[in-house]
Length: 138
Length: 138
Image 1 (spheres, each protein chain N blue to C red):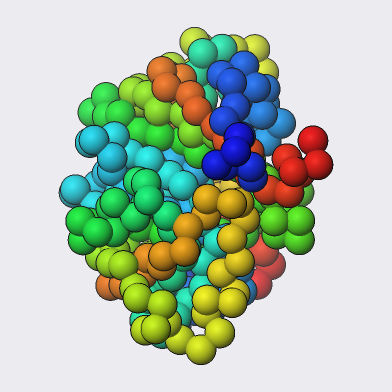
Image 2: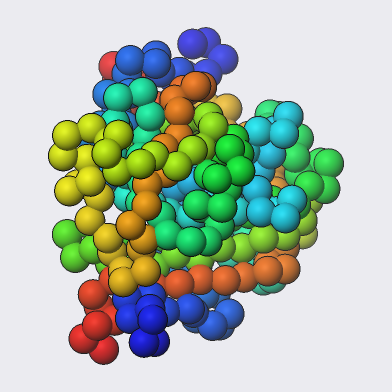
């Protein structure tokens, strides 16, 4: 920590715990070779992250079996601290009947076209870090 | 709006105005063909978004002249509403002397290795949307 006193890498279990404390993430994928980030509300369902989707870029990517990432963070501007977790894995459509108990009811649509299909992102790669002055006093 | 009552596309001026109301964004880029999202604190500096960087993936991408995206959003989970703006453009290193007045002082490092170099993302493509019940009563 000598060269990097304000940053800490997080273990996979800690990352997965942190993913469970939020419900808003950002999905990163490529569309036409351009990087795109889309906010989603998500639920951790076993070994995958699930969000709702309708026809469009997110689902299209899913149906192509693309590798996407999901980033979740909590940032405190006042204290200049926070954490960020990044999950990378293949996106696939998940039939509603294969979702875990209660998952569908947690994924309430935010708009009329939010879609009634589900995309799962396998938690193949999970990494995270914590940044900020919190560490300096730990 | 018949088919999409809870979602509104935002104009470029409105997107740029919203970018000025936040200071935390997420940069999306590809590293080794995998999508990656990294949170950054940023400043709008003329026609580009600027953030601080040190040696590593963000700066490496910048030095390669890669096309990256920057996403900024504000989400209210309680009201299931929010907005999201996406900027896409080429990333380049910006010498400190070419930054706008006060920009460097606004980009306070959050950790000891935050870096003392600056990356600018040209606002070549700007899009945004507002989602949620706010619209339904507008």
